[in-house]
Structures are given as C-alpha cells and as structure tokens.
Image (tube, rainbow, N blue to C red; front, side, top):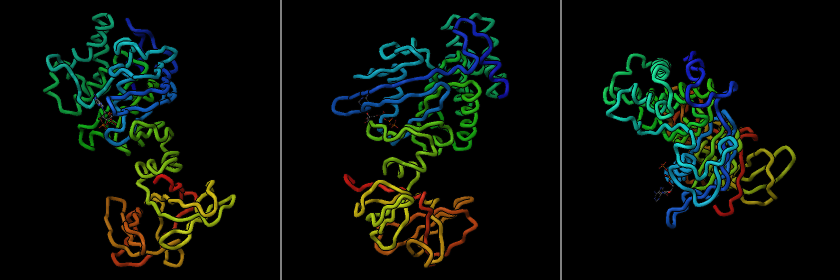
Length: 377
Ligand SMILES: Nc1ncnc2c1ncn2[C@@H]1O[C@H](COP(=O)(O)OP(=O)(O)OP(=O)(O)O)[C@@H](O)[C@H]1O
C-alpha cells in the first residue's frame, strides 16, 4: 500500500485538488437532535472533529450511532442543530452536494456494473476524463490487491473483496471526510483485522477525516484517535481510547469499554494522593484521588486486567477461585467473594495457573480504581 499517496493525491482532474498536508477537513456538529415520534434517536449531540482525525461512534444497538452518521451524510434530516464541514454549513445540503465518501456494511455495489465500472462511477459523476478514470481505477485496484479484477462483477468476488471495492469507490474521488457504518460487520474476524489495518493505513497516509460506526469495542480501540461513546441518543464521553479506558466519566463507559468490576462501598478517607473506600463486602480499597466527601456511597470500578492476584493477607479482599478460562495468551478467572452476588472477574497473562477452589487475595493500583457516585444508580 506504499504508493497510495501517489495514486490518490495525484493531481485531481475535475474534482478539486487536495491540500498537500492531507485531504481531510475538520467537521463540527452542534446540538444535533433527531426524533422519530416519541423516540429521541439523537439528543443534542455536539462534537468538534479535527482534520485528519479518525473518530468512532461506539454504542449498543439503538444508541443513535447510525442516525448521527446519516444526518452528517445528509440521508436523515435533523430536527435541529448544525453540521459544518471545513467552513461550509452543510446541514441542509443534499448528500451529493456534501462531497463525503460512504462505506456501509452492505457493500451497495451496483450488481450490473463491473468492479471497474463501480469504482469509476463517482469519477464519471464528477466529469473526470475517460483516460484519467481508467488510470485511477487501475491504480486504486492495485492498492487494495485487486489488480486484474476490474472486469469482474461483484457477485464474482468474496465479501472481503467486495468491501475493498466499496472502499476504493469511496476513496477514488478523494473526499475530505469518509463516513463508514459498520463496514466490516459482515466479515470474519481474520479479514476484519486485516481490513482494519488497511483502512487505518489509508486514512493515515491521506490524512483523511474518518467517522466510523461500530458496536465492537476492540475495533473502536484499534482504529480511533477518539471515540464518542453513545447511549440512548446521548454522547456519554468523547475522548481518546486511553482516557476512556483509564478515566471513564460514567459507569456506562467503564462497563462498555473496560468491562469493569463494580464494588459498592463508602468513602472512608479522602487525601491529596488517594481516596480510601470501605467496601460493602469487606476490606478497604485505595483509589486515586476523587472529589467525594467522607461517607459518600460509591461504586469502585476496576477492569479485570487491572486486578492482580496475591497472597490472601496482601490484598484488599480475598476470594475463592470458581472459574478458570484460558483464552489464548490470557487466563480469565472468576473469583467468588463473600457478600458479593456476582463473580469478580480477573484477567491475567496465561502464565498464571490458578486452581478452582484456591483461596487468593486481590490487589489493584490506586490509579486503576475509578469511583462513581451511586445516586441514580
Ligand atoms: N427511520 C426510523 N424510524 C423510527 N425510528 C427510528 C428510525 N431510525 C432509527 N430509529 C430509532 O432511533 C434510535 C436510534 O437508532 P440508530 O439506528 O441510530 O441506532 P444505532 O446505535 O445505529 O443502532 P444499530 O447499532 O442497531 O444500528 C432507535 O431507537 C431506533 O429504533
């Protein structure tokens, strides 16, 4: 894929030339809202996306990801709010006037057109000359490893190949922003992993602004500069993968991204360097500093990978190993704590070989312990 820049940044014919620094443009969404009858699909969504940034909308089914993307694309009309691409307000423009690229889960290739004709289509719409269309289609196919496939029909390609063609078609006219809705959702894991790498490489090389929709946490973490975690039409948190992982602002984010364990307790001591929490099921846990008053009821959230096994007298609590599952290089342990109705989940490198029935202690670094107030839980 090394020559992708040459291909997609070669002087444009017909369409406007991209900037040298990268073809991506910034995109801003302000107070975007969309209702369907009583359902608030998207509720006052606002975000500033930088030129060349890879942003993912992540959330459970029905959280408003696709609706937000469709409003940016121009396929759904917002009730209120504005969408700006570069310095242009596109809120009320027809999709084709927004000059955005799209890649959807369903490849949406024209079945009656060959692969070459499918990729050529957006260029022809833009009045690019025949010779340039032929050259650019050939070059683009080569980039994604499909040289020589231009004469085939979509039905003669595998799912992964079809999605590569869809990607070519979205990129061939160099849109400054590319919108992707679960583009890899229909592919098997191996192919998904491979195409994730390719999409990321293309995006980086060209400096494209990409907005990507997925409900797959791992995919979001691998691809994104920032992730908007959505829930019930609201953006819970819009942050870098690391911030979301290490400093979740809501229990939902801690659970959705980190699959955190939640331990109820009460703040016993607050200090500059830590907060001490007396856990309901026994034991005292040191968390990083939080602005909770003494006596406040909290949930301590700790990701399975940030809990470590230790001798019973070393840990903030002890429990009995109940389940042990090896997942490749990792071992997942379910620990039964007295007084807690669900198993505490621990994840560690597979070198650790705990035995069911074994009694162990658990510890965590204070900085890995996030606290959430329990009001409204
Ligand atoms: N055309 C429509 N008519 C009525 N309700 C709709 C329509 N489109 C979406 N909704 C509702 O709006 C809410 C948000 O839907 P949306 O498709 O944006 O969610 P999503 O996060 O993309 O979900 P998924 O991952 O399942 O695609 C849901 O409650 C959905 O039922």
